[in-house]
Image 1 (cartoon, rainbow, N blue to C red):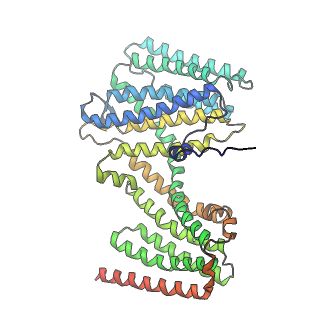
Image 2: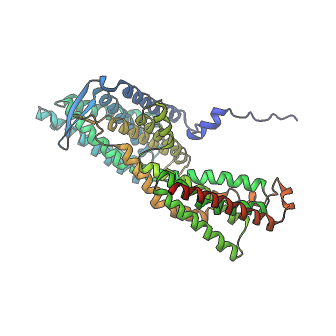
Image 3: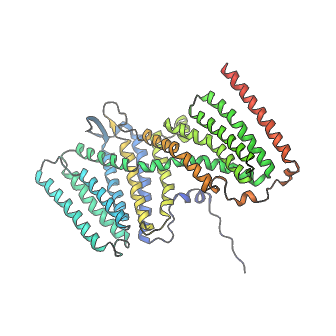
Length: 475
């Protein structure tokens, strides 16, 4: 019986599909909400570009926060207000479909945020009284209904119906608060406080993303290590590792002198530790393909990680440097886009798990609610500027880059030690690859002693050459 080969996915699908949620097996209402969530996020990014291009031509509202005179484009205030409504509709719908220990804290946080947008500066006192009374009645009814139905399927089914219910309720409160506010400035102050809270609550995202700096270096080192395991027999592979380990300190010393980057001294220390580790493995007779491959991966990964730390601490990244030189995109827009892309990748892992406390449909909705609020927060804070100087009131890029670097620096070494101890395949790939017959098996015709001697001679020669260049530059 003839069988047809499955069609190979296209290049774009292979490249981008892993960063988007798989819709298979989800209810139609949830699929519609997911598509709507993606459209909202991309719409906010496109709007960020338009605002960046418009520059100072947009009408602004001036307001005061912590005795600082600030300004914000009116259109940004309007769009972020709508994003605030949409993000909380996703969050509350998702939290209601989860366990009460998730829903109740999220509802309490929403009550705090709603408290901040309450029109306390309204000129009509009875309107303020009615507004607060309406808020209290709303939350009381939600708690009563939830207390009577949280054990039933009421909150788990018909996500679309619940979403539009939350969307309508939140819209009423926000529009009433905006409509009864004394001035646009009071609305801007309320939104500034709300988005500042969102920024504080989402700092954990940037701490977690700090591990991505370490993972990037590990992925690059692992790729070269797997190539060596696939093609080289153990004797030649060991010689390659010896060469890399011995030449690493000389290369880093020369690069440090050329760049004057103090972070490279940390990589120099790591390179010496890798050599010491190799000597310990050799004299303990534990030198094997898997153990030596770990050293090669770490030796190749450490310069990438250190460079990432250095650039994060200085508020830069690779793509930003390139685009600054070419002038294609504003750096701030690039920062927002890259942050959103990283959050897309995290969302796929977060929403791909199903559980009792956090079912998958709840995870999807919570993820989009958080993502929309985070992007809206960056949009708001990136346009909230000091009125006199037009400088950013809160430099979110510097803050977040610092968190990324500090988390990678503080948790990166324990994270790598844990991988060496428990997840060695994350460093070198599946262990069976180190046991397979290499493709260049003919290299075994040369004895291991010869390979070792060649690697020593070549490494010492190259190190002496690099050291000579270094001394020539110093003089």
